[in-house]
Image (tube, rainbow, N blue to C red; front, top):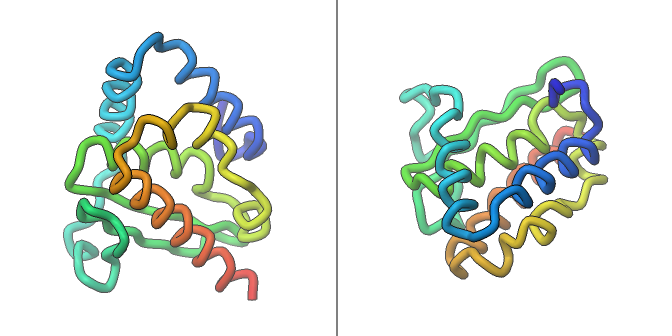
Length: 142
């Protein structure tokens, strides 16, 4: 199913189902890493301080553009697991309206078990990324 036309709640449910296919966290980490490897290429010219996201232990760059009424995000990290977290966030929030983003609580974070299994620094980074995405949505929503 194409995430750009799927409801945001449907995409979250699909992610939860995918992660439940794995019996242990080593397999889930590997799946995250594999998702991160599939991220689109992030242009080098945007790997600057202007696009760098602070609050993450790893280096993360986040770029946003408006695409009609939707927000289009591009992001990358120098960490394989964080890149996987980015891939998950992109599936949920990319190409959504600011209102959809602001009204959607990231249920998948708890349902997948990320709070329990990420290190405190990676968990802080995940929340910094979610806050940045919602911050962009808030600014675009006025």
